[in-house]
Length: 161
Image (cartoon, rainbow, N blue to C red; front, side, top):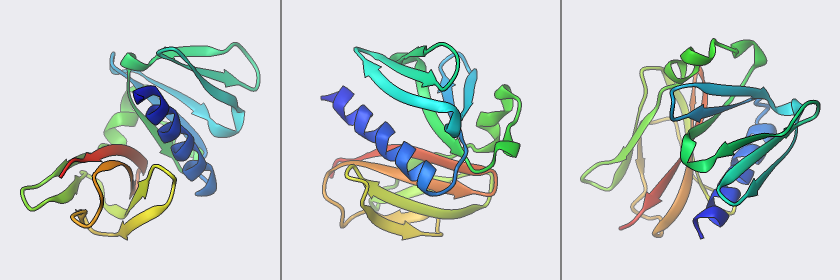
């Protein structure tokens, strides 16, 4: 079941990124390295067992074990290409639920927009605030797109009460 959810999350994130004109996909790995690929140079993303396979338009298919991926980020502009070690720092976002049941979004960068999507890709909340009231949402898995001046980060969160 987790693999199906992950496939759906990646597909939705990819669709959102291309719709919003984002040009770069960054895969964050557990060893603190990042792999950055221009979206228009990706032929396909598939899953096989516990691996995400990324096939570029030219070159060999790359395989990433799902346990080694800590996150996936989309950037707005190919000129935002930073050294791989600095990509995480430039778009750092922390998300947690406070005691009032609100989703708290923290970033050292100015947050310009927060959008909550369900797993069908439907927008369920939109705000420019760092507090998002999710009390009215049903329990389940959601995607949170956080826009900052440094780029856009998509995070998964689970509402369990």
